Length: 142
Image 1 (cartoon, rainbow, N blue to C red):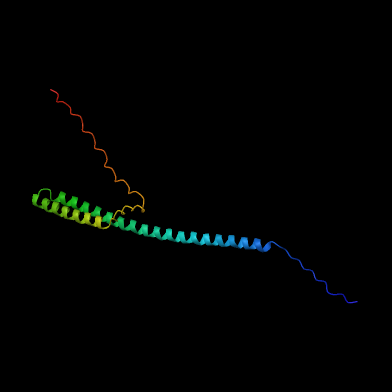
Image 2 (tube, rainbow, N blue to C red):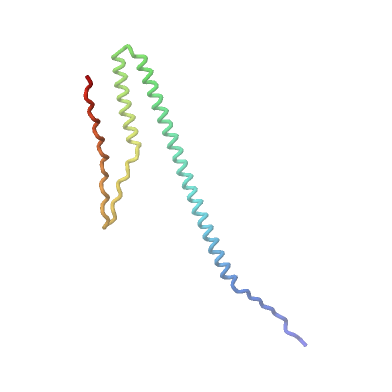
């Protein structure tokens, strides 16, 4: 007698849903890691830009120190000649104006105040600091 072949089927239910949840969580972790890596790259670029600015500022400070040191030595060397001292004073004034212009040109402008949203009241103007009281008069002693 021929018997039909024996077939056994096993079905495990619930794994599909669990695997989908695990896969979603893994996708979230990978996406968060990608965002974190992107943020780290941005911070590194910002840090490199800041380091470059610090280096440029250091060079400007070194130049100003050299200028002032040189001018003070010139004043010592010309102390006996009023015309030479006046010429140096004029040179200092000109360099001061150039330095002030360079600082102003390389200083970012203050941000404009934020406009209130429609329907919101405008911000109150900043108050001036209170005036310092006058010093009391001291009568002359005599």
